[in-house]
Length: 183
Image 1 (cartoon, rainbow, N blue to C red):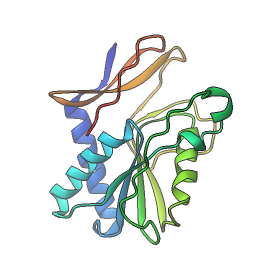
Image 2: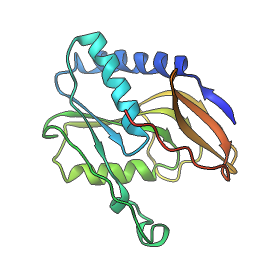
Image 3: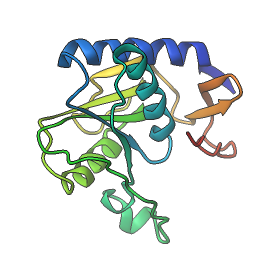
Image 4: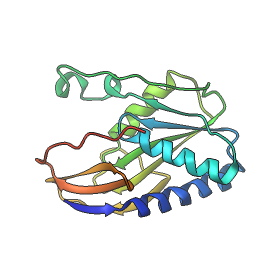
């Protein structure tokens, strides 16, 4: 296992992204953060923290489960585990920031956008991730990322949480899964 982003790097990157969001939108009053279930949720919570530090405003933050919106749901998920989606406010006319751990093929992001359209039509949708990984299959890329990385096909990237914070690690695809942290 090798560390791609330490807890310090994650926090520094999310603090930078928070500043870029404030600049781009002239504040945070129309922002909504939505973490892709499961790994995007603790990252969205940490991004919400940095936005609150900058603007002294609590940005509405929720989550989306993409299980039934995946394009491989019929073949890859014979017994899908569906979790809750929590959208705290109407998305109509809001600037939505979709938050996830890794941008890879683009398929997760496409599924998340499809799922969120059931909640209304936002003014804009931006994608924020910790790692922008090579390997696009769809023309979807993050607007905000902490680091770009080229990872071998037989490796995966996991979000890890410990008493020091959130970090991103690379390990063999065959390694036991690390359960995503809860915020």
